[in-house]
Image 1 (cartoon, rainbow, N blue to C red):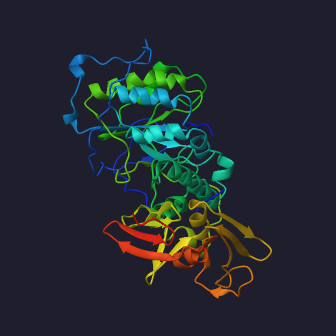
Image 2 (image 1 turned 90 degrees about the vertical axis):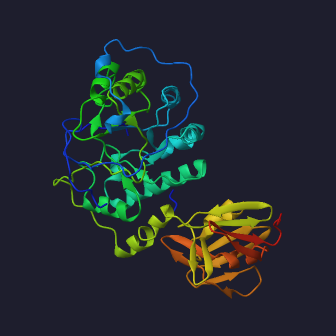
Image 3 (image 1 turned 120 degrees about the vertical axis):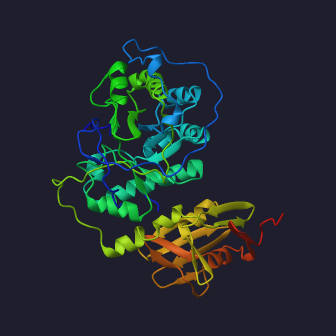
Length: 420
């Protein structure tokens, strides 16, 4: 098993159908095939930027296959983005090859322009936690969840979409127990390990020729999920990449990015894991139960307010008996306001739209300075304060003017917002 390099907003493992002949040292559970076929990506040619690798494995022309073979390869890159990611993207674009990037939240924050480039060029973005520190991730599930949600929100703010794909730092073997798999599956995530290990992170300075050899190891079955790295210190991986691509093209593989519908490859759960406390049923109800709705089809809730507009995706808001509820902090901050939690009084202080008011989620009350409190459906859920949208807009001096619905959207226009 190779070891990879190392604030919160808020599976069932597949049936064993085969086993890899090499790559990770652990047993893996392997699915049969992907459910969907992605459309081919169209890229403009770039100037070639990588030097040749003298020891790379060459494949005779007579062995070259075609994409009629039914074999698929998924190139996956962990631990970025870094300064090397742009070089990787240039190579992928030159060869018209899609890939999947499992990114770390702390680096996504530092290089949002690279995340945007990954997204804009048609590659898949996966969640690799925030900081890759095993001691913070595998002591209990709640800590792992916190980093997944933290990175998810960072990527959502950059691209507008939430990553549904997850890869555990170091892989799931020796880290995930059945509970980790089950809760992430229930929450709507798709966990991917790999069945081909390039070996590029086994030690410092792994030469490109060795990386090519590792990344092209044959697998049992028709799908290869290849582990590569685009993080700091992986210059040799960049040098190896064109030769890895050439090998799979010559052997008739089609290249695809991972999708939520792709049948996952996952390592077997180890029987030697330490005992870890399970989250309470209330925690699971608050955090896990409704999370899958974030990835389900549904209507977007769009809000026009004081010349600004924001949107909540399905799963980010609730419709309870015809009343729309939203997380108070998310609503206020997205509309340019300020919100602060008063620990002493257990209330939320809000400034939005030129108005100041207070939410008391423990007693279900909203109030303005000098005025008596008004009953509201404001409440605590999963550590966040949820408030009826109509109440929040009214207390912010922008009451609802209209609510319209289409097949894909609910649109709320507040007084003071343009209707044109």
